[in-house]
Amino acid sequence: MSEEKKTNQDIKKENLLGDFILFIKGFGVIGLALGVVIGGATNTLVQSLTINIINPLLGYLIPDASFTGWTLGQVQIGAFISSLISFVILMFIVYFSVKLFVSRFLTEAEKEKVGIK
Image (cartoon, rainbow, N blue to C red; front, side, top):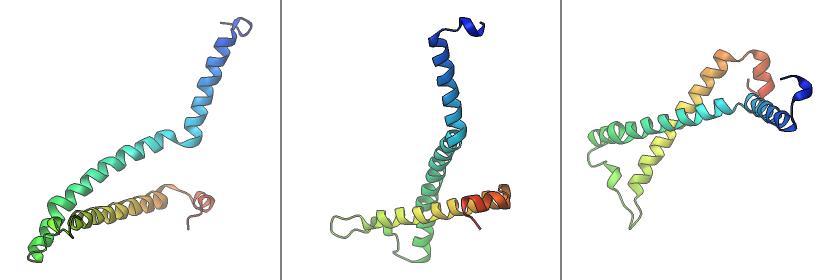
């Protein structure tokens, strides 16, 4: 189709597609989506690690330390402690993943641009 035969609707479709592509490139939407998916999978693995390995090991090393059943009145304090352990492990994973990415894939100029030493 030649330029003069394009309708207004065709031009709007092209602009919309172009705007969408610029949005994806500019804001890293694909990277963000991948990060969310990988983060969700990592969270599942960390929860399994905490519940199935760390908590039983703590119970084995410290007798009667199975804190998952601890309560304070109606408050499930043991479940909170288990979630806290999962959170700390997940934060270590995120921290070291970012450190690895930054040290491996960013140049010194890019590090300075985003404020990382």
